[in-house]
Image 1 (spheres, rainbow over the protein chains, first blue to last red):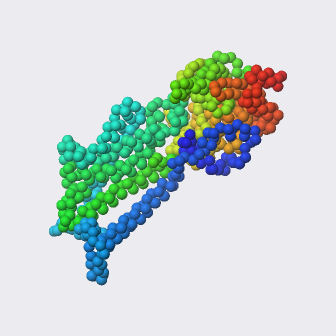
Image 2 (cartoon, rainbow over the protein chains, first blue to last red):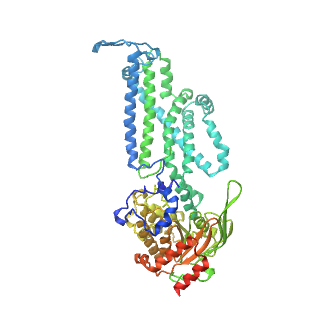
Length: 344
Length: 283
């Protein structure tokens, strides 16, 4: 009964003027004997526990996410520099007349381990290697775009595979029982162990990387789509049955649209997952560019220039966040008209 | 059995819109026993009749409606709809269904919601558009085509559900407490509207309710049921003149019939006594 509230408006909502249907507090004395006796009346008007969001709330949610992210980044920067202020290397900035000797000294807060944020930022403006024109920032943006391209293909392929698998599983208990355990087991294999096998199997290059990105994408989509495809109001399914609708029609017109909010929740997870997959895959995958390769390179130069690796990590994180926000914006756009209970 | 004011007289059983004979339904319970939800249900509904099923919670009235609509299978007995088994009737799209909740699809506009059964049944585009408009005009929501369900009130949503159920002109309209979640004012307004639609479309209606005034006001016959096991204890012919209006609710006969249904529900009137009283009143 709880999903009655999903299709109906909140009980408090007034009647709109065009029909002139009013609301009254009291009940017809004749009517009061029977209707109130039925307990499911109150259940029918109880609000959905997971809550409803009006369409405009999704945009507001997006703005709120950006504000929250900014706040988080500011806070993280304060913690980072605060740690260095308390226990890092001495701060020597004679040009602005500031010298500070932190009271404590902890290895993890030294400039080697945890460079100042402004050192990382200024590293972005310096050349990647000596004698090269390209700045680190420009190089990393190029690498990020390359990685995003791999991730995007993996994301798309993974989403389609996830949706197809989920569609098969919700229509066949046999398939579900036979394969869902392996789908789950597949995610227990560490991707770093699997990556070399995929590279051997498919050769070095873009395809291997895309497969690894796909591997991290399809799983959340499969699980969420299975839930979403089974989330339809049972009475909606009865309604379709009364129309003598075919299985395909039920799928196309009821189950699939009902699963969209669920699928989007998974796509947001998959967006960041596909980027992690692409970055991990680039090492063994042997592609010429990308953030994964940059991480490999700057790892070897860590002792001489830790800022480069940190800058790469920063750009990788920003790429993940950007992809996440793009999916969230797409969700807000596509579901803008809907007012529906959101999963999770 | 006389429905003196119905559009047609429920006469020959061959032409019955719905014919239930010895319908039983029992559900297995966890401990291995069974619960008898319905027992020995015999009921004929004539074409264009408006029959209400009324009874306490758990009397199986909704179960009975679902059996008629071939949404669940009876454990025993036969269900004939327009002379066919219920299953065939469903495949022939003889049923329009309206539930207590509107069950509208929140990703479809009002227009697209009403269009859904027409899409499923592969009506031509032109025919779809024509019928959607016609049906929304019928429920007086012609100005709300491109609204989304959440923009409508509960009563308006239920009218969309009615328009959707009637869009493909089913022979039989099955309504399961359609106004149970609405306030009394809206309910009375929609009752009048349902009667107008019934008169215009000339469909047969089976209407499940737990509101006595609603059952009396709407129906040509009220079937009173009791619980554990669910069975029919009385059938009250509603001889209020048609068309019924708000004034009907204030007539003495209306109150008499409300009382009669109420006392039937309390088990004070057996079937035969009611029949005698009803006949006495008519005579």
